[in-house]
Image 1 (tube, helix red, strand yellow):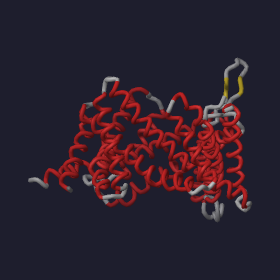
Image 2: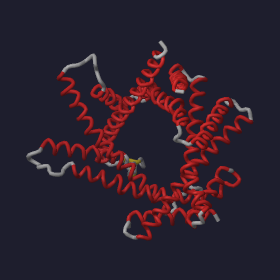
Image 3: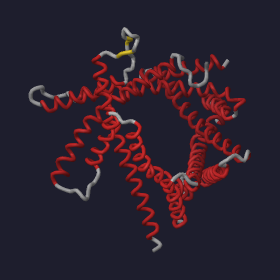
Image 4: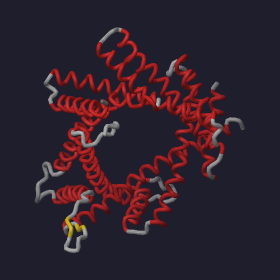
Length: 215
Length: 210
C-alpha cells in the first residue's frame, strides 16, 4: 500500500512540476484530480461532522432552534437551483449580518486596540535622555506606522484649477509611507519565496529519494 | 418580501451579535450572540456543501454538453465522487483516506507551492520590465537584501558576516517591516470596520437585497 501511495505521490509531483516547462495535459489533469479529491474530502467531512450532528440530530429531536436552523439550511440549499435561488437570501443575510458584527468586533478588539497599544508600548519605560537609541527606534516605528496609514488616505481638496491635491504634509508622509509599504511587501515576498523554495527543495528531495529507493 | 425581510434579518442579527460582543455580562445578549454565531457557522458549512454541489453540477453539465476540456471535468467528477464516498463509508479519519491524502492532496499541494518559486521570480522580472519606478526598486532591493540576510550562504562564510552584518541587516529591516505591517493592519481593520458598519446600517447589501 505504501508503495502504491509513493508511486501516486511521485507521479502527481512530476505532473505538477512539469508546469515549469509550460502548461500541459499532465499538469491540468493533476490539478483537476486534486480539486475533485479536496472537494470530495471537504463534502464528506461537512456531511459527517456538521450536517448530521448539528442539523439533522437537533431537528429530529424536536428542538425549536434545531428546526429553525434546518429551515434556514434548506433555504440556503435553494441557492444551488437558479429558479429557487431567491429563497436562500434570508439565510445568506443572517450569515452576512453575523459576519459583519464579528468583523467589527474583531477589527476593534483584535486589531485596532492591540496594534495601537503596541505602538504606545514601544515607548513604555524608556527614559528620554538615558535610552536615546530606544527612543529613536520607537519614534521611527511610530513614524513608519503613521506614514503607512497616511498613504491610504486618498481624500483631497480641489485646488484653484479644480485638480485634486493633498496638502504638503500629507503628500510628504504618503511618499515615505509608500516606500515603507514597498519595504514591508518586499520582506513578505522574501518570506513567501523562502517558503516556496523550501517546498521546492522538499519535492526534489522526495523525487530523488523515491528513485533512489529502486536503485 | 425578500427585499425587506433580508435586510431586516441582517441588520437585526448583526446588531444583536455586536451588542452581545460588547456587553458580555448581559446573559440574554450573550446567549443570542452564541446562538447566532453557531447558526452562522453551520450555515457557512452548508454554503460550502452547496458550493461543492455546484462544482459537481457545473462539471457534469460540461461533460454532458461535450464541451472543450470535458476530459478534465470527468477526472474532477470521478475523483470527487470516489473521495466523497470513501469519506462517507470509511470515515474521514480512516487509513484509506489518509493514504489518499498522502498520495494525492499532499504532493499536489506542496508541488503547487514549489512551482511558485519560478512564478515569483517571473513576477519580479515582469515588475522590473513593466514598472520601472522607485517603488519597484525599493521592493526588489528589499527582497534581495532580506534573502542575503536570511538565506544560508555555504559558499560565503565568515564570522563577521554571519554573526554581525547579516543579523544587523535583518534587525534594521524588521523595524521597518513590522511597523509597516502594523500600519497596513490598522488600515485593513479600519476598512473592515467601515464595511461592517455599512452592512449593519443597510447601505451595503451583499446578500442580494436592493
